Amino acid sequence: MAFRFEELQVWQKAMFMNEKINELAKTFPKDEIFILTSQIKRAADSVVLNIAEGSTGQTKPVFKTFLSYSLRSAIEVVSCLFIAKSRGYIQDDNFATLYTEYEVLVKMITSLRNSL
Image (tube, rainbow, N blue to C red):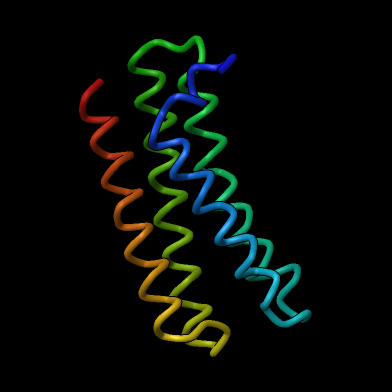
């Protein structure tokens, strides 16, 4: 692996979740394409991108800052999931699975941030 972030389990988990969110967003109605679809995809992308950006050639305090951005973006994804559920775009069981997976991801990001 050429880049440090590729070895991070938290980045790998964020990439896995990013794909799940991308697949979910494809099922949203077309009238949400520039609203909720765009928002949830950008937030999920931001989780991955901030972990990668902060991990490479940065000081520990800078990396912590980027992990904080990543954490906030993960929470944004969860909020988008609640909106999708309230609008009937996601079933309860799929919501619960994604919610639990993001709970794990948030804990991973927080643990890494606290370890620095």
